[in-house]
Length: 578
Image 1 (cartoon, helix red, strand yellow):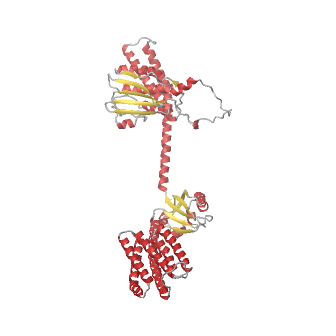
Image 2 (cartoon, helix red, strand yellow):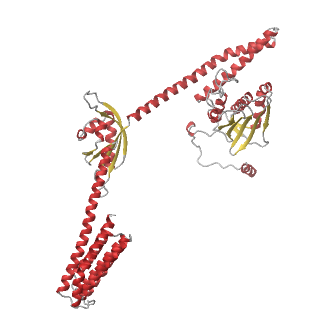
Image 3 (cartoon, rainbow, N blue to C red):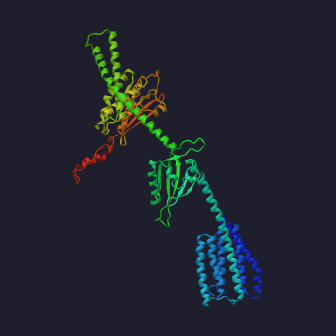
């Protein structure tokens, strides 16, 4: 906007100069002097054309018209005056200056190129090769001086207008930045290359509870905690000497202003040190701008999180130790209870009355139930403690089906639930822990049977899914809601809580399944809707869990040369087919 206004103002001045000089030019024309009339016509035409272009919004063309008119006037005056250094050449030199003020790069380049042509024409006029048809006299010298004066005044007015406006703009920018720095939340300090404080923002008074001048000299360093001063000074030296941006968190003293005279306290401050690098003199020490931010609340929050995490880890460890201890303590008496109850029901100690036989059977069933609960507790404690070790080996997935179905067959018959399988004939060998896989299947099948309706069907399916073996157990039981599905795998979680729940259990079955699956680097998915049943899917990697590099020792090869093994071609074809 400022440049456009300057272009329009220059066009008006050129038009006024041309119109003012036109009467004198017409009089000179009556005296057979052609050059004044030509110059007046050029000025008037350039002014009218530039104003017309400004009204149409074509300011770049308007400025170009002014520059080219100035160059044309300078060319005519240079040719008319045989001297090399004349007013014509001075007028032509002002044209590129005017172009640098008002126009963009293409016009500037053309102006300098045309100036070279004007200089060449002046040389030719001096040598007599070019000449104006009229003889140069004292009147032409006055006219050339007047044209130069008008051109110089127009260029000076344009430069003065732009300069004054840019000074106002720069002052406004400086005031805006100063207001921003003074009122920003972070304290801002600027240090010279020798460490002298050059500027301190007003926000520093609020951060440190003191006046700004108290931070000059060694005031800032003296407020830093003694244990944190080396870190700050090192970061400052790296920014000051090496030109590296650094960020440190330090403790700094904050005074408590007011009549109460409360003792000062230390707060955590994040200091960001940014060097002001001088590209022209890279060898000198850099000025450093330091941003200081109070991060005490963040430190307190992180400390609270760490304390809470430590408490939670201790509680989890205590729970795992308790479960392991109570499990081992319960197994010994439970084995005795189950053993003696089996002896009583089998008649080893003699015939029992029907009522005593019933009591002994109940004792035996309850003992077996408690043993299963203890086993789950022990497995859960080992999984949480990371002490459950896998022994992987190649196993045929279909070999797991029959033993697991036999384990839940009695439970299924009691509820009149039919067990079905969907196992393809060609399944790849699975690298996994067979005992863990059986436990996964038994828990999934037991859950499916337990939560199935009477006379329903539970289906066990296996199939290959990319690099994984997909094992799914589907039932048509009570199902679960979306919130319960998201919580599957949490220890002791049951969809039906409370003393009035219909189904017994500890809520550890799926937790153990999830833990065993994750040990195999697999995943557990659940799809369920209330009243429509549940489908539990386990994805186990066919090639087994990946070896953790950090848990294995470094292997040093005994031979540098690789040992080539000649394998038969059919083996390669079989691997490619798999």
